[in-house]
Structure formats: C-alpha cells, structure tokens
Image (cartoon, rainbow, N blue to C red):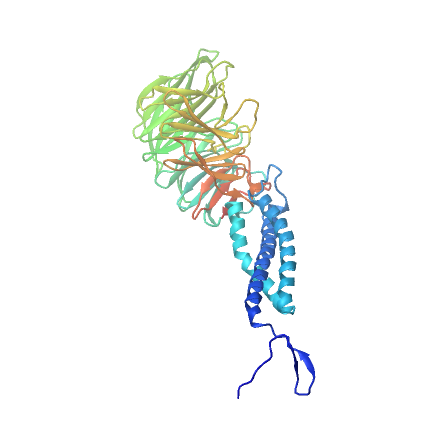
Length: 521
C-alpha cells in the first residue's frame, strides 16, 4: 500500500478527526539547520576564546601585581586581556544572534546550549596556543632552599662542578644539586674561623679555600674534594692580614695550590697539601692578588721603599706554577698605591687596576703571554662607564660574581651611559688596542652575566634571561622570570641547568632572598 503524506507544514486530520499543523521541518530546511548549528558552534568558539584569554591573561600576572619596574609583566599580558574583553562582547552578541537564528528553524533550548558549550570547549586549545605565542617564554619558580642560619652569615663565593654548586659561606661550605636544590654535603669552618679566600677555579675536583679568625690573618688553607666534601688537607701559612673575605689570595692550577703570604708566594701539592716551593718577592714587596692558569701563576706585587714606606712600584710577577721559579717581572702603569686590583680573566690575563691617585690609572689592562700590555680600556670613558662587578653592592667577596667576561679577544662588560646609575647595556671591547666593537641595550639593569660556551654569553637584565653573541653584540630574546624575580639579589650568580632550567645563587640568603633559587619553563 502506498501512503501519501500531505506537504510538510500543512494542516492535516488526526485519526480522531482533529485538524493539526505538521511541525516537522521541511526537507529543504535540513541544510539550513545544520548550517545554523555550525554558526552557533562558531559563536561558542568566540565566547570560549574570551573565557580562555581572561583566565590566562589575569593568571599570568605574578602575585597579581606587575609592571612596577621590579616585577615586569609578561609581554603578552596586555594584548591578551584586551582580546579577552573584545571576545567577550563579540561572543555575547554572536551567541545571541546565532541561537535566535537556529531556533527559528529548530525550536528548543537544549541543542543551542550544547552547541555553545561545544564551541567553548573547542576554543580552549587554540586560546592557550595564542596566549603562549603572545606571552613569549617565561620561567617560574621550581624550587628554592631554606634561608641561611644563623642570620649573621653571608655567601662569599661559589664553585660549579658536576651538576652541583658549592656555596661558600663565612661559616663553611655546602654543596647543592642543581636539579632540585637538594643538599649533597656540608662542611663547617674551623672553630671561630671565617672563610676569607677561595680559588677562582676547581682543578681535578679540588678546590682551595682559606680561613682566618676575626681581625687576624687569613692563615688556614684547606684542599676540598668538591664531589664529597672531604677535607683532603690543611696547612697553616703566614697569612695576609685583612678585614674580611677577598679574592685572589689562593689559586689552583696544574696540580699546585698557590697561596699568598705577606712577602712571598707558596705552592703546595694540590691533592695532598705537601709543601712544594716558596718564592720571596723581595724587600719591601708584598703580593696583592694571584691568578693561576695554563701552568703560569701571575701575581700583582706592590713594593714600598724607605723607612716611611713610600710607594715604589706595582709589578706583575710571572711564575712557573709547577716549580715556583720566577719567569719575568713587569712594571705596571702605576705611580701610586693600589686601590683596586682585580683579575678579570686568568687566560688571557686581563686585570682591572685602579690607583689611589685621583688622576692615576683606572682601567682594564690586557696582557699577552709574554706579559706585554696589549691594550687598555678606561673604566670611565668618554662614552660610558664599565661595571665589571656589582660593587658597591654586597656580592661574593672571595669569588665575585662578575658582570663581565673575556671571550677570545673580546671583553664583554655591563656599562652605564653618562647620567645613569644602573648598567642597562653591554659593550664589547677588543683586547688588542682597547677599541669598542659594539654596544647593545640590555632592556633593563644587568644583574648577572654568565659564559655558557666558547662563543655564547647569557645575561640577566630586566628579569629576562637573554643570549648574547660576544662577537657581534646581538642579543636574542629569552624567557622572563615570571615567578621568583623578587627573590633575586642585586649581585647573583646565574648558572645554567638542564632542559632550559636556571639556578640563581644569592650572596645574602638570610631572609630577603633564598640562598638558591631554581626556575624552569
């Protein structure tokens, strides 16, 4: 039997004889229903983007506050929040419009609601990816270590060895794992002794550290196995008097530990501490700082003359590290006593020398292998001032954290322009002749500079870590410290970790900042 149905939408009789209207959609409107349903999903996508941008934008602000100078906002924060409001108004309008169109051909409330929710869910992933693209890379706090106790101690220097950082405090040494900040070992200083010097390098797993009592010479030298924390040896010397921790009093190189005495330089076997050699510097002459690298020890020596100890000369004495024999003695360009003598690089040998005389030398001096002066760069020049260290801020006094590095024949350093106080730029200078090669704005005050490979430096400036090419001065964009920027001191040491992670070591870890802070993407 063939049944004939009346045209859809027309009135028809029921079996009881009642006249009703057929409400089924006509076949020609089926495509319209699906098309309008798809438009409702699209409107839900816009509303979902609004929700995503609101959530990601507002939660990207560390501590619900940023942009005050000390805590910069992620770059995409403002665009994300603006898009959030734009999508909010657009989404509300589109959803209202498209739902009304759908209900004209498909009455009901359940289907439009489901379609809107589907669109909003589908918007979450593209919303996240768009936010990440606008925001750029960021680093968040991964871990930190407990504050230093007692509160009277401070950090004096660090060694980075085999996936760990050995942090020296005035009261001893502690090794931390760079992966999670776990403490590997700890060694206490001698009774009533404080750390007053440490070698700038670790050689064959051995670091050299010296201790002294308050207002007494730095006269107790230890050799430390940096893997286990075991004290390999201890030797008493006639230490150099001082008022606190300072750099350049001990060094390590070529199986020898080098230590300074008031009028001499001494060498000990690196792993056993057996006394090896002693070089007397001459009447009226005393060592200032020492550096050892590639089998050569260089010592800056000040010589005074006469009963009134008038200034005589500042000299650079080169020794054969293995045997302690003097190789050469070179006068430095100084006519008054030293005020600052600081080794920037052991090889090539680069020295910052500042005299007490107001018009005296205050420059970075570069030397060749024969101790001949290659070039010099004034600390305060016509165009800018060099900021090699964090002075006068409190830093790691026994092994300072530098804002400068020597890569090949280029000195890279943080600098300030005339009238500025914070070093917001970096410059590269040729060691040969001292000519400036390039100058690059850092995007904020430079707080740390680290060499991570033979041809790559990394700087921390404006709470952002950027990669720097020392040959050209090209500064690549890098991740922002979104969480933890407030826990970074003014003179930290920046250490690369694994998988794009970083560790910041603070000199003061007694409360305002943690001793170590680990950050990750």
